[in-house]
Length: 305
Image 1 (cartoon, rainbow, N blue to C red):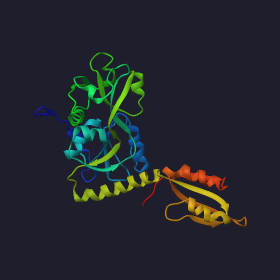
Image 2: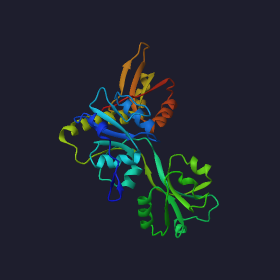
Image 3: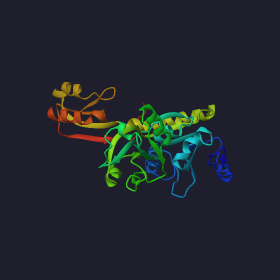
Image 4: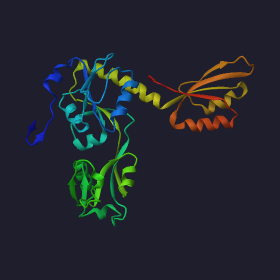
């Protein structure tokens, strides 16, 4: 449907009639870079549902939630207009679409960066060199704001898909595009110039969710946070001589306090604790330096704090 020159995608009446209006509605990307990680994340939270490429929506068997599979750039609009209650989408689309939605949670996957790149042999070395140049991008709103902030006068070329090939076919002198690994830049003989922002998958919500549904949202967020917290910690088991235990306690901060149990072998104890992922290897090296050699490490599925 077109409204004042703006195309708005409206779900079919037949599809919407299939939903239980008392259930939460969550929109996720149907097919693209966030799809598999989003589905995996939802399943790690314990949600049970069916999904396959041609499916339009799924109903969870063990939670009052309907999942819609949409084009990623439609999700912010669906959430802001209340067609759905929640969405999982890249921050890049929030910055670009500028829909009025509430960000609830960073989901710690789908990491990428919006960058400016130029051909390897380009004379463009600094931002100032972009003045008067043609810049190809599908992120026109973000690009205009960035150039205005940096006093750059450039000509934006709006492109849908395959932005990275535009310099090689003479359409643009530089590009502004999303990249995760930089491999596409290398394949197209492009050189990184500067980064505009970092992005990751986030959970967003409509600003006018009903009181009843807010209770369900909070329950869902508890599940999400449980998975996210667990991802940041490791569970460690080790056996050690009791006499060096005081020194080990200073090395292992744990979460709260460690669990210490006596072993059948006299003078030895078993220690279990939870360690943060970002200091995990530092802790392991310090333990090894103290003579601890048998360390069992397990992932944590969920952690409710």
